[in-house]
Length: 414
Ligand SMILES: Cc1cc2nc3c(=O)[nH]c(=O)nc-3n(C[C@H](O)[C@H](O)[C@H](O)COP(=O)(O)OP(=O)(O)OC[C@H]3O[C@@H](n4cnc5c(N)ncnc54)[C@H](O)[C@@H]3O)c2cc1C
Image (cartoon, rainbow, N blue to C red):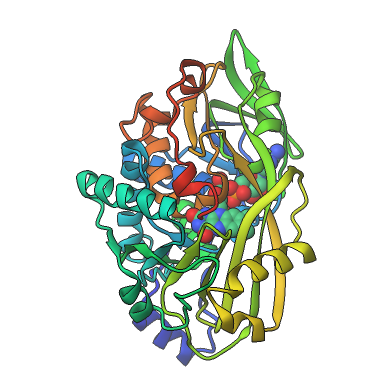
């Protein structure tokens, strides 16, 4: 595949942009693959990419019922950070964050990684103590974060009202090299690089059943026919329960909708990401100038990928005390995605009771930031049967009570 470069843009400008190649192929399915990944979201595509890049395994199909990147990967608010409390979480999220730093060069695709800084506001004494503890844990884990006082919060983000009557800002957990990236570009960049290695991406192909013999996976039934495989990776976020049922096991996962919305575009007003977890809201400003706003997940199980008026009202109302300028904005668009929540708010990257079948899910409200680290570790797990990055996130932890409690870092925050 021809590389994207300044030279290529100049060349194509000279010939009316008629020479660009397709970013990825749309092949017919083979009868059998070494590895089938179900779900062409960021995690599925990254897994396929690192299987090829790190282990030379390219007889791989990524099967997607809709279009690639059309699930949560194309619906999230793109926050990237690694300031988690527990060691296994900090390891996988920091691995991911560091891979984001060089992802555009690695994939030869501009994913617009913007390390603009992420701030998590402390608005109660309890929250302040929690973030002071996280800052100390991060120092031990080699993750660069700091707890900053209210004056510094206002310096970084002058639009904040730190003297709110109900929830004054007492400080914040600040990660300067955290930020955002363009979500679609992450999916498209991985897809293009996978296709370049000969990996098949089969879109509009729904997996409807999992076949096995003697306790080992042999293939999947799809709307394009049966496809055989030696190993199967299930990476379908909110639909993990359905796929697990097809494979004959159950998961400790709930599916709920998580919503977000954007305002009309305005002049640059905010150049970092801010989360106000006590009041259940967070915001950043997109390159187009829209304020990108989100809140907590719906409090009932559902599969509707839609927004609702009550969510806009509740979240905006919660944020207005700290961000009074929001009261003057018109809200333009809203949407939802189906997120996969575990009880300890940590993901599952694991072998399963079905031989040769692996599962990567449970990223809940915060898996965009993890895509490269998750793909890296899950590819290693699928190729070698073990990965230091994923070991703590096995399904066994729910049976053995080894929970990785990230409810402070991931309960509301994204
Ligand atoms: C509103 C919102 C805001 C968010 N904000 C953030 C944020 O700021 N930062 C952050 O880190 N995370 C955020 N997240 C979470 C993040 O988006 C997800 O954790 C992440 O994108 C999950 O990626 P994935 O590849 O696992 O899933 P997905 O991108 O959902 O991909 C799974 C794919 O599987 C496919 N699939 C399902 N069933 C089948 C089947 N039977 N056959 C074939 N294909 C199937 C689906 O069509 C889908 O494309 C947010 C999520 C939402 C909804």
